[in-house]
Amino acid sequence: MLSDLPSLVKVAREQAILGLYNESMTKFEQVLTMLTGKDPRIQKVRVEINEEYNTIKKLNSIVQRFKSQNSYIPAPVKATSPDPGVFQFGIPNPNYKAPSDNLGRFAAAPFSHHEEHEEPDSWAPPKAPEFKPRVPGNRQQPKPATRPKQPPQQPVKKPPESKNSRNYEKPWRANAVDPKAEEKSKEQNKANTFIDSIYPDGVGPDLDLIQALERDVMEKNPNVSFDDIADLDDAKMLLQEAVLLPILMPEFFTGIKRPWKGILMFGPPGTGKTMLAKSIATLGQTTFFNVSASSLASKYRGESEKLVRLLFEMAKFYAPSTIFFDEIDSLGSKRGEANEHEASRRVKTELLVQMDGVGGADDDKKRITVLAATNRPWDLDEALRRRLEKRVYIPLPSDKGRKRLFDIYLSSVNHKSDEIEWNHLISKTKGYSGADIANVCREAAMLPMRKKLIQLRSQGFNPQSIAKIKSEVEVPVTMDDLKEALSNVSKSVSNDDLEKYDSWMKEFGST
Ligand SMILES: Nc1ncnc2c1ncn2[C@@H]1O[C@H](COP(=O)(O)OP(=O)(O)OP(=O)(O)O)[C@@H](O)[C@H]1O
Ligand SMILES: [Mg+2]
Image 1 (cartoon, rainbow, N blue to C red):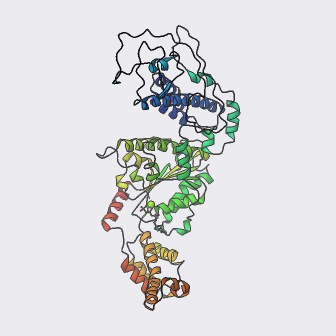
Image 2: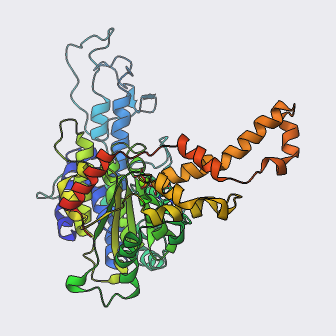
Image 3: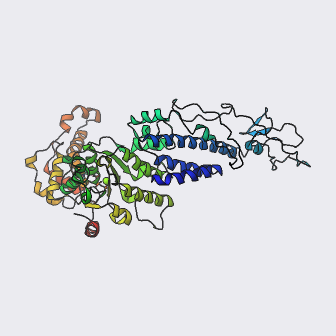
């Protein structure tokens, strides 16, 4: 990747020279995101490139201001006028002298569409440009979001003219060698956040995006343990094998035994896929990034592709990391569909590229594992499917699993275990998902309270007085309540869907 850098920088500079500031900025941004790592040489280059980038950003904002001032129509300019009002950021400048540079030339141009403007018979010859150094601070510029550490701006030096040199300003040259670069790179080594590591000054092109990622995507502690999850022993073992063991015993997972780069959990809705991923985050052995399609798409329209790149850069920095893409079908559906949006195609491509880079690290500590979950595996793009090497089916709970689910969800409710006909419950809930069983238990837990409330209301109790007799409302859950709840809550996964999962599992799944 670094080998592309010189050519990227070259193109970025050429575009800047041609005035294609937006394109140039995008290239520079790409370069900056590539320049990561603690190597002081890389840090030094990064500081220099950042200076260039900022200069181009400033130039661009000046140009944008000119464009946004199109509605401003200056006073008619006549050649005979000794001192035309100059169009400087939309404000007629009473102290206007002669045009001093290219900007001046533009400024003095006549605006022919002004109604009252009369064309002069002849225009005066252009005045010789008079060199006038820019005085910093005489314009009202918006303050950049910087920390005070930023060194003061150097005055722009004019490059010496020579026959071969191209005649354009290279203001970034003045800032190219930063005497404090070494000091900064030392500081850098101490950096323990991604932002500090890539933007030691606290300024950079994608600061807001990175902050958003750190805020929304880095999972702190979701607090779900393996014991909270019923059944799914195979999936639990596989996740441990793929995510935890390579960190604990790296020497074993080498060569052909390298850990899986990507794992896909697929299965009907409500079977515990998201819970399983969260339990991996809770174990805390890896930095966990929880990415849902919404955190990549809605908020940062048009930036999603960049977000994917930053996400993987960040994961590399905090490695060993696990990146979890929940509902990956919405992010990585098949490419080339008729209704596919160009932006979403670019996101998919970026995801494929980044996933190829995963697992390439020689250092085990730098490992990234991609975890994904979906209940529509058949919608996945083939290339993405290939990269998710291990595809695990998360099925509906077995008999044993359903018993465990009842135990988990009734443990917090008052009930008499020996009065409950477990076998009846287990056979009646065949085909129910974990989420369905949680709903049955919730419903059963509410029923006695609901009945008691109706009874109390009929006796003339109002809600306030009911609150005083809480103990009467908290009635234990009985087998009748559970049966009634069962008739109220039906299963949510159809047999047709189950067949689809089975056949996809046969075709593409792993065991
Ligand atoms: N195996 C399980 N053990 C414990 N609870 C479960 C299990 N499966 C599902 N649940 C319950 O169902 C809810 C939904 O689970 P989860 O979000 O993990 O499902 P999912 O497989 O990710 O579903 P979807 O495919 O719709 O995203 C959980 O909050 C939990 O209450
Ligand atoms: Mg889920």
